[in-house]
Structures are given as structure tokens and as C-alpha cells.
Image (tube, rainbow, N blue to C red; front, side, top):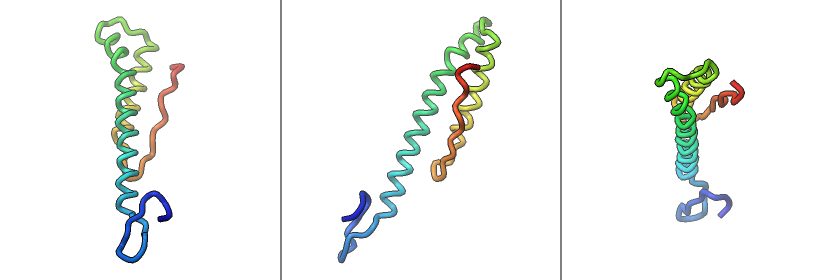
Length: 91
């Protein structure tokens, strides 16, 4: 067989488009999940600072950027992913 996603059709090895698509979607869904988890990890301490009334202007700005990023990642269509740029860490 030639390639990772092949199946036997009774006569020859042929490309298994469905298996390839399923694997790609699973990989993209995993990436999306990891990015959402990472963004939530960045948001939590910044949100805590806001909730406690001790957030600096810099922390408030970073919180807004990370929340926007998380929303944009959540909106990514896994069948045609176009990932948003991560917030600038220097904000």
C-alpha cells in the first residue's frame, strides 16, 4: 500500500479518503481543544485580579485580548481551520 490511509477494495489498495478526513478532523479538534485550554489558563489569573479589584491596566488589557482569542478559537471551523493569532505577550 502506498500512503498511510489505504484500504483494500477487493482488487487493489486504494486511498481511504474517509479515514484520512476523519484523522485530520480528529487532529484539528485536538489542536482546538489544546488552544482553548491554554487560553483559559491565561484568562483565569487575570480574571481573578479583575474580580478582586486589584488588576492593573496591563492585566485588564491582556484579559480582553485572551478572551477575544478564546472566542475566535472556539469559532474555528474544524473542517477548514484558520487559526487566530495568539495575543502578544508584551501587552
